[in-house]
Amino acid sequence: MRRLMMTAAVATAAALALTACGTTEPAADSDDAKKTNEAITLTDASGAKVELDGPAKKVVGTEWHEVELLISLGVDPVGVADVKGYQTWDQAVPLKNEPKDIGTRGEPSMDTIAALSPDLIVASTDLPPAAVKQLRKVAPVLEVRSAGASDPIGQMTKNLDLIAQATGTTEQADQLKKDFDAKVAEGKKALADAKLGGAQYAFADGYNISNQVSIRPFTSGSLIGAVNEQLGLKNAWTVKGDKDYGLGTTDVEGLTKLGDDVRFAYIANDGDKSSTPFTADGTLSKDKVWTSLPFVKKGNVHRLPDGIWMFGGPQSMEAYIDAVVAELTK
Figure 1: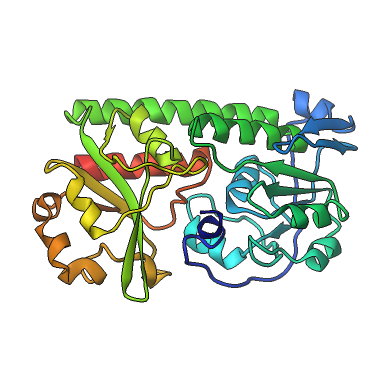
Figure 2: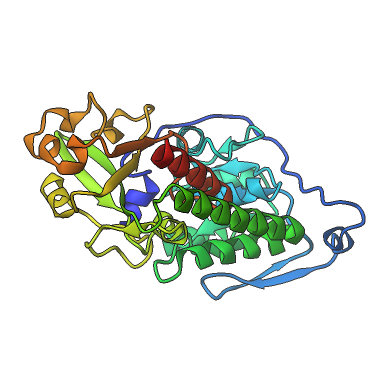
C-alpha cells in the first residue's frame, strides 16, 4: 500500500526546476510573531525529539500531504518531491512558488536536499527508515504520519498542528480547522436539504494496468470516507481497508456487491490516462459487468473534478465537499 501511495497510485510524472525561498509571515502583533526567535522542541510521529532554533522558514516536503499542509499554512516549501506530480494531482492547493524538485516521494535525492540548506525537512512515516536516517544528517527531520484509519480526520488535524508548531503558524492552523468545520456543516445541511442524508454512497479510484482494472474502495477508515460520514452519507463499501489509509481492493465483479441505489463517485485525472477506467471512453465502457450494474444504468456514476488530492489536508477536503455536494444535488 505504501508503494501505491508513493506513486500516486501508479500515476506520477517527473520534474520541475528552480528554487525559491519559503516564507512565513504572521501578523506583527500575533502570538506567532512574538515567538519568532524562540527555540522549539517537538516530538514527531516517530517519537523522535526535534529541536529547532526558531520557526522553520526554509522547509522541504517529501510527501504531498505534508506539502499541502505547508502551503495551506502560508509556508512555501523550497523543495518538493515530484513537483509535476503534485501540480497534476493537487490543484486544489497549488504551489505558489517554484520549489526545487527533490526526486520521487519514495526516494528523495539527499544531495539535492542538502544543496537547499533547509531549516527543516518534513517527511512522511511512509518514507523508509534508512532514508530518514540519511535526511537527519542534512537537517532536522519532522516525521508525520500521513494517515491513520482509526481516526482519519483527527490524524489530519494532528499533522496540521504539528507542522504549524514547527513553522510558527499556529494561528493559521486554527483558522484552517474552523474553516473545515464550517464547510462540513454547510455540506451536511445542503445534502440534508436535498433529502440525501443517509444516502448510500461509494467512493473509489481505479487504474488500468496492463489492461487489468484495479479498483480501490475508500472505506470509512479513509480520509474521504470519514468526511463522507460527517456529511451524513452512508458508506456502501463492505470491504476492509488498510490500517493507515483505509483503502480496500476489489475488481469490477466486486462492484456487484454494492446496492442498487448506491451513488458511485470517483476522482481521476486526465493527466494520467491509466486513472480513468470509469469514464465514458475508459476501459470499463465496454465491460458487460460494469455496464450492467444498476447504479451505472441509472446514471448514478459521478466523476468529481480533477486535482482534488484524496489524501490531502483541510483545504483539499473542503474542495471535495463542494464537489460532491454540487454533483449529488444537481
